[in-house]
Image (cartoon, rainbow, N blue to C red; front, side, top):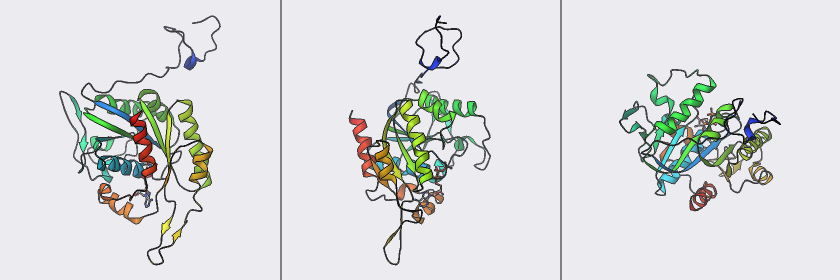
Length: 280
Ligand SMILES: Nc1ncnc2c1ncn2[C@@H]1O[C@H](COP(=O)(O)OP(=O)(O)OP(=O)(O)O)[C@@H](O)[C@H]1O
């Protein structure tokens, strides 16, 4: 321990200190067979705003553009990714590691739900167990060659989110919001957390921004005027996209066919940032 120790272990450079209480950032290595080029976190400050939907849509969009894509479902206690892609076969493993599930279009998926005897078995695990599960999903899965690994984060700014930022080599994050001021304020918390962890902000998706009436074709702002553009500007987020309230989302997610949804260019601004991050 240094003589002038302030007990700020997170920022202290003294190595081998026996009194260290907090581990500094220590990025984990992926499975020896994995070649993961970019890790992208999808975060929301609040639950139920459509984070998993946006993860699924972005993954599908990049896959359709010819990239090889994986999804690590880090929402360990509330996993929904396998269901939206219609996957329920249990995981297998071989000498090279855990074999991720594969969707109809070839997106590789790793999720707690693929390890449960039945999908309605609750996952009531404490934080450290959840954190370790996420680390194992990353390290022990044989992901193969992956251009983009999307990490569907748990909602909020919990210790699990910190674990992901500290242990996985996250290149950037996309935040998801719904159009209420409260949610926008909570986006700020997620964004500031990312800043403090030196993770790049790639974009903001404002989900459920409007509803297009089948009869009159007019856009209605059911949850109030969209605020994402202003929020993106306030927090220096370089890309902003909106998604409508569309019953087709729920229908396709329930049928396990989220890949069939055509976002019709709605996520282009975010995709451009992903491609830019890959080019750097
Ligand atoms: N734009 C939308 N239009 C219609 N339904 C939507 C839309 N976005 C999300 N949903 C539906 O709302 C539900 C919650 O979405 P989702 O699971 O993506 O949210 P989440 O933010 O990941 O939730 P959690 O915080 O619990 O992980 C799902 O049934 C989804 O199909």
